[in-house]
Amino acid sequence: MSGTEYTTGISTRKKYSGSTSATDKSKLRAATKFINRTAVIRCDAQTTETDTNFTNPDNAIVKDVYLNVITVDATETVDVGTAGTSNDPNGYLAAVSLATAGLVKGSLADGAITLGALLYEETGTGADVAYARTSDITAGGDPVSYTCSAGSDTAVFDIIIEYVEVVEEIN
Image 1 (spheres, helix red, strand yellow):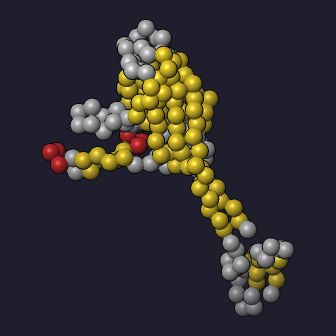
Image 2 (tube, helix red, strand yellow):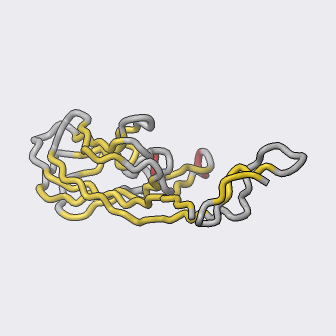
Image 3 (spheres, helix red, strand yellow):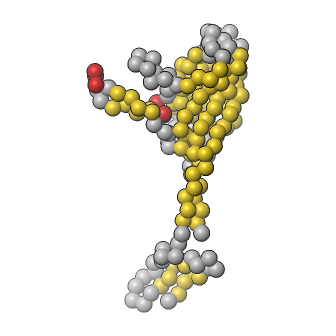
């Protein structure tokens, strides 16, 4: 038998008599960890798509996105989404009002959906359509962006992103 034996007990590419090279996984131990994280990004009203300078980690599961409205603007709404590969500028929040101070979340209310398409799924058709919240696993590695509607441009708000970072460690 040939191969490399490490002090941790991991063996790689052992060659057995009469067979081709194969990877022996019998001693390999992998630990996948889920690390809960929250990003809080301060923003002011911008009417063009604006990069937040926050990029989702490569292995991110985005659980939810909220706003904390600090300076109200009754005429403003905001879209929050992604640039990059997923390129969905309102994928997390779509036309959410900045008219009330405090925490705001996206809604799946019939006729007034403000949760972005990356965070919900639709089932059924016609009168039988239903919506359910889901997590986003498609935007890992993509920058988060936002765009405000035309208004007086006085709003100040935080984008709050709850996500899980998936980290793999090999022992």
